[in-house]
Image 1: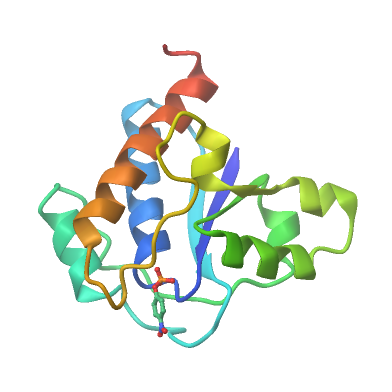
Image 2: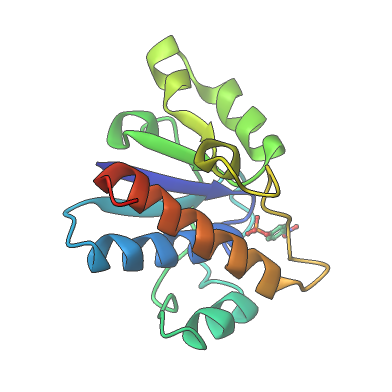
Length: 152
Ligand code: 4NP
């Protein structure tokens, strides 16, 4: 399985989602691929926001090596599942899809997991609430891996 996590800038939410998902995949002993991208290219080439790096590091996850990149149409062929962090990201991705098969790969991450109190991962760039984002992504990525491995 190849999974892509997508937000707006690829510096706050999706790098955390990538790092957490990689951690859960590794712990479950799975041979899956995970990457992340932004619908915008505003921060292309940059390391994740230092607040994301810090909260990941405080939880024994290193995301400092990641570099932001913009989503491209080729990603529809490279990945099996493309998870948007919020509805605006999902809408942007839908506009880029050119077939029903591509559209089917697009999911709103928290809604897809089900049983989450929110459907969207709120953008922490201005409000600084990275803890809330980390906690949501931690639970959601854990549930995703459990769901697909049949554990629980
Ligand atoms: P992200 O957060 O989409 O979670 O990476 C943002 C990063 C940068 C900006 C907005 C959101 N920005 O406006 O530059």
